[in-house]
Length: 66
Image 1 (cartoon, rainbow, N blue to C red):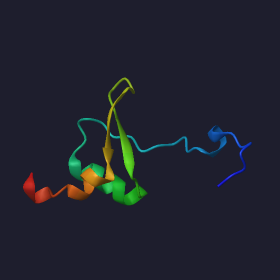
Image 2 (image 1 turned 90 degrees about the horizontal axis):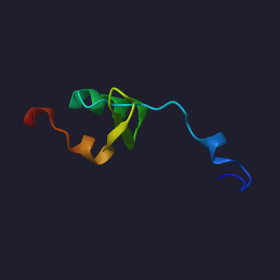
Image 3 (image 1 turned 45 degrees about the vertical axis):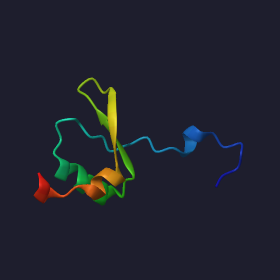
Image 4 (image 1 turned 30 degrees about the vertical axis):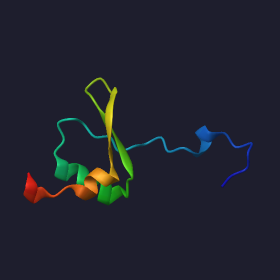
């Protein structure tokens, strides 16, 4: 909670964990665990957003099913 006068840009995190389409599912799962993420952007080689991965998908990840 902050005062209404505080600019959102002053509060937001500028360094983010970014995933790439070619990343392996176990790497993404490790990043979610390590950084306590709820969502992470998936970006292409031009740094354009192509999707996102959510914690719900990561929780459902079972390496023995792949």
